[in-house]
Image (cartoon, rainbow, N blue to C red; front, side, top):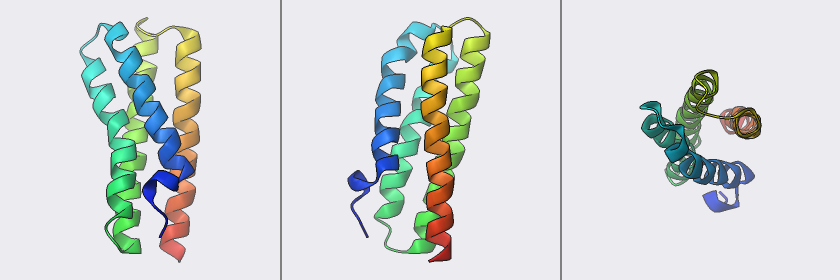
Length: 114
């Protein structure tokens, strides 16, 4: 199996988490900490799952990462709706999160069927 750092989805998720870390202090809301945790959970679960050594375990951790991605999207939508996150930043981050979600879903289906 490839190293987790070689997965494009991990690279995108890693960048997403870094970008969330940069924007979270600007949100000035209680949800900023949870947004950071959910964003960081995405690449961390991809990494952990890939090191577990079995396809079923990898698929399980990809599902967790996918759930964290959905959670981060929900939190971004709430931050934007409350006026804590501007339209441009929101659209940029939500687009990246959606790409990651689609990639995780496809990767999980591939892992499950192999």
